[in-house]
Length: 86
Figure: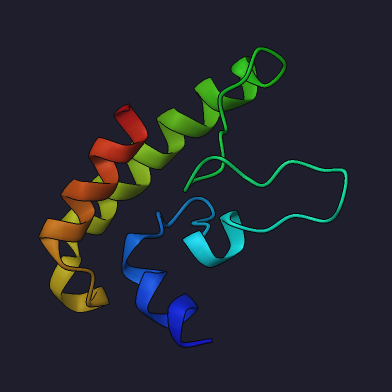
């Protein structure tokens, strides 16, 4: 529970962050997770991702305009914008 709380800052507001404690283990016969964030853009999901990406950017721009009122720091908004673009 503590690891989940401490990792929360690394989680994008549009996805899942997987702590190393969860990436290090897997049920017998399966591979552990290899990524810290869920991969949204895949061949099968490309069209969905393109729409989601545009909406996320618009949402983050809206958040920037209201950052203080919604207690969403500008440095985190900018970090999340970089995540979307990457």
